[in-house]
Amino acid sequence: MTFDTLPSTNTYLKEHADELPDRTVVTADLQSCGKGRIGNTWLATRDMLPVSMLIKAPDNAHDLTVICAVAVCRAIERLSGIKAGIKWTNDIICSERKVCGILCESTLKSSCNGAIYNNVICGMGLNVNQDEDFFEKSGLVNAASLYTLTGNKYDKMLAAEYIVDELTRLIDEDFSTVINEYSQRCVTLGKTVKLVQNNTETTAFAKAIAPDGCLICENENGEFTVNSGLVRVRGVGGEYV
Image: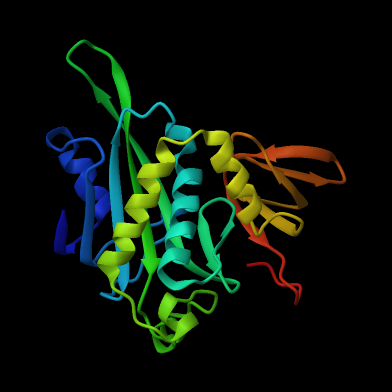
């Protein structure tokens, strides 16, 4: 389903989930009120691609952010040839700049037999054709689009087709294979990170990705696992982004 304008493709699927079939995909030429993790917002522009998929009562709900991240990386490489990596947990990075964010949202649903299950909406926002001026004026110095990285304009609907194709394939694939690729693509590993959880900052070394997608870190207090929160990676200049 493609719309000219929507407040949010994720919100549309949440509001209409009961009447839509499993794996319905929604895109919009303009998303006016998009959002990311931790309440972050996306700036409205027709050069960005919002695409969301409804997955009804999945057995692998907790795996879907990892699956989406790998799917978007594969789609970017098919479309543009740019090498894509993942900043834990859900930022897609090309040439050390963010080109895509992912937000998977669960909604509880009661069935006629009294069972309660989760619908999951997988939302992805890919920077496709914005120019450098857009990011400078928006103060997004660490973001980029496929256009700014290659000098080429891309068909947003083709990008959506590739994302959906890869996502559909990976949802049904053995998760151990997916998490292995996620780990190989994760640019967070092997670096010093700042973890922000419950308004508390902790500095640690990112060691590995656990089989369930959590981040395994280590500091002076030993090894520990991170399953949520904000992670900033230390760059070559010493700054954390």
